[in-house]
Amino acid sequence: MNICIVGATGNVGRKILEVIEQKNFSYDELHLVASPKSAGKKILYKKKEYLVSNLEEFDFSKCDITFFSAGGKISEKFAKKAAEHSLVIDNSSYFRMDPEVPLVVPQVNPEDIKNIKKNIIANPNCSTAQLVLVLKPLHDLFNIKRVVISTYQSVSGAGKEPMDELLSQTKSFLENKTIEPKNFTKQIAFNAIPHIDEFQENGYTKEEIKLRNETKKILDSKIELSATCVRIPVLISHAESVNIEFEKPIKLDKINSAIESAEGCKVVDLRNDGGYVTPIEASGRFDTYISRIREDKTIKNGLNLWIVSDNLLRGAALNAVEIAETYIKTKK
Image 1 (tube, rainbow, N blue to C red):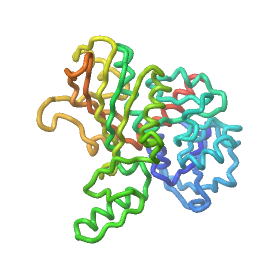
Image 2 (spheres, rainbow, N blue to C red):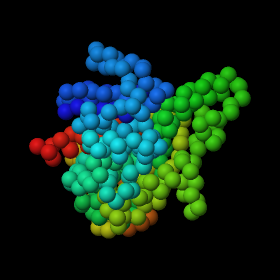
Image 3 (tube, rainbow, N blue to C red):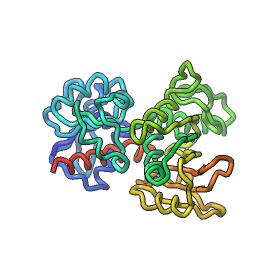
């Protein structure tokens, strides 16, 4: 099994390397690929030095599985070429809503991996991935009718430069210096920005529409979902406040048991000071954490909960590697 990582020098590319090592993912050859700007760099991985190859010149026939983590424009230009020789697992948004490309969270819809037509599998939006992981066991029990979600998304979801900007803005703020946003529409340090991705004619942003459409594609097209996506001054991990309306009557003990039993989920809901998980505590961990589980008495069969997960892992690198693992199992 030879694997390739396109975008190996970026946030998600490096996280894929970490996940491969932590999960003891077996491979024979490893190829690290990036843009011409990053080509020629050296990456030390597992005590071995790897030379980063130029994407525009790379021969994908060397690979069995290729992870794309370099953005939609790169996937649009090179993913189909790579798919002629290897399975492509794409982290960008480019293929997600393509009806011939499965959009997969392995714990939720692993059966879709068998329906590959273009030799490409799409990885969902980071906010979607952690959401459907929790919704799946609840939908199986009580039939979800409607979801209202507010996200609190870390700056790492926008890339390395926004992470650096948060740090530099924080320093400038503390030194009482003027702040001029570069990667954000407004100051991000000590602030919250209710705007992620481009605005659409209906007033929603592309990020909010992605959450809706991807959840319906992965889980159930009948589920209605309304989202408000907010960027907050946190480096890593996305949080979500979720309100769910079910078709069937719910019981909190069954809710808790179903979530706790779901692979990749961990309930931390002590109902006291600090008895919940925050973004900083989820950073670097594989689990998706669920807290503040309580009934919403303002609607019939209503539930509120809080979800936190490392967006670079569950929303990207971890999910991508688990897709590869699931794919390999289907071939055995």
